[in-house]
Length: 286
Image (cartoon, helix red, strand yellow):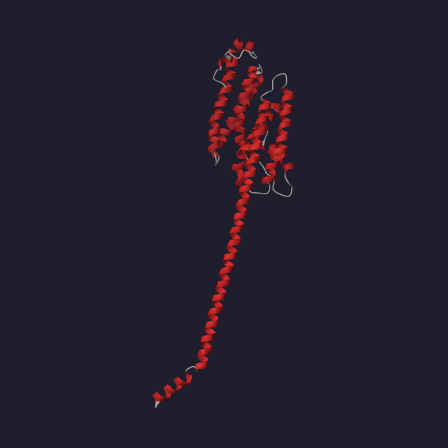
């Protein structure tokens, strides 16, 4: 009797056919709705990824285009800064002031025409990202500016003074381009080579006091950079230039030493037009 009662209750609890069909239909609709939702989510994900990568591509393309413009500006700065340096080497006793005034004006033209273009490209951006692109031009500019300043005043043009000349070129509303300490020191290292050539030229003109002043100045630069170079993070370029700088110091010292030791023999010949005569016994000096 108990067995029949439990079987009857099971039959009464079993879902009716209409209810089964309703349950199946509801499950199918839920599955289809979920599938459509997943498809929509996948489409939205693909679209957002495409947009993101499109932005990345635009950013990289803009950076590459800017790098090309910066490289071109750096080359123009290098070429015209070299012209300023060549102008300084043309000076003599007779035309010193005239030559230096022209060199200073040429340097100002480099600043206004070419360096200003570099400043406009880099202002408000991360300068270190493109440093390798513009560093050669900045180093050459530092070399030309410090050479002109030394010949005019006999002092070293500091990094703060150079950066102060760049501030008027920048938009006050954005971060201005400032020459970093590394490029400044690399430019100073190159300056010693030009001062060596200038010292030899001054000795040939009989300006021994000026040559000795150059010798002391270059020796002081070398001494200070010798203390700083080992502590620099990116010092591969500086290490190579330190060796060249030492050679320049030695050439100037040897030239001044020869004048003092053998000056009674060669001082009357200083400024002679006879280029075949072994001036001061320094045939190895270029």
